[in-house]
Amino acid sequence: MAEGRSAEGTTSSAETSDDVVDEQTAVQLVYRPQSADALVGLRVRERIKRTGLLLRGVFLALWVGQWLLSAVGRGSIDVVSTVLFLFVVLVVWGYPRLQAAHVQRIVAWQGEYRATVSPAGITCRSDHSTLVQKWSVFQGYRETAGHFVLLSRDPNIMCLGVLPKRGVHEAGGIDRLRAILDQHTTCV
Image (cartoon, rainbow, N blue to C red; front, side, top):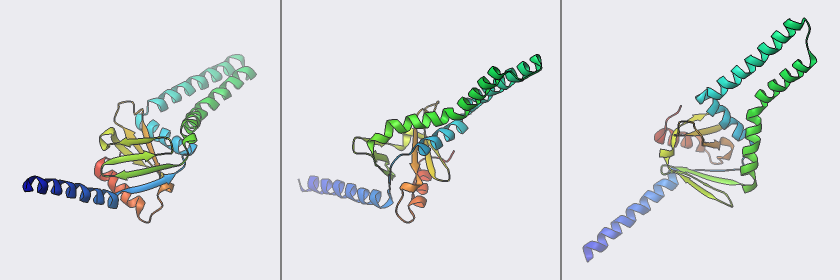
């Protein structure tokens, strides 16, 4: 019996020391999501996947060609064709911003987010939900001037995790966050 108690004591003390290490190495972020955060994540995803960028570029090129052929064929610029062309340019330019605004409407009502990045993974809490993600969910991350964007492992990168640097309030936190990310996932 004494041996059983001794083993249990060792197990619980090991768990306690792991918890202490996690708390010491963990980085806390506290922030309110902004539309710009989602836009940065969508742009990073687009640069890595390239298919959306390619499709939008081809779509825009086709409309430019149609507009030019119309203008050359008539010998003058048609007002309707020009208005349609400007509308297409506006849609192609504004589509990522519309997506970011939609994401903002989905997450903003939850208020302040408190994210903990540790060797165990990422835990994100709000007043209404808690999301726990292990590192195996992510294929990698990309650092921008103001964010760390985590990319999901699925082929279409359907899920993004955006960690705004403004959420780190402790000295040296960004360097520790970068070190945790480098240790558990790759920079892509």
